[in-house]
Amino acid sequence: MLDAMAQRYGVLPSTLLMKGDTFDITVMDVALTYQSLKEKGANKQDVTSMYNQEELQEIMNRTRGE
Image 1 (cartoon, rainbow, N blue to C red):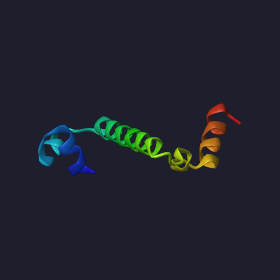
Image 2: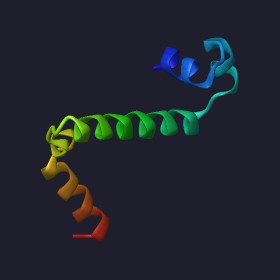
Image 3: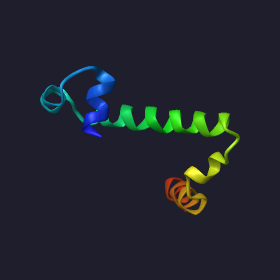
């Protein structure tokens, strides 16, 4: 992941290690997930397979306090 982030930002991995933070990791994760979602949609693949429905339901129930 470090190499991919460095390529995306156009910096050396050592620079990323010194200046990067968890926000950069979050942005990279969201960007790659969104890119994957778009590609699957364009290829008419099932995009719901990216997520476990039971796990999402459990998270939602915990958030609602159930």
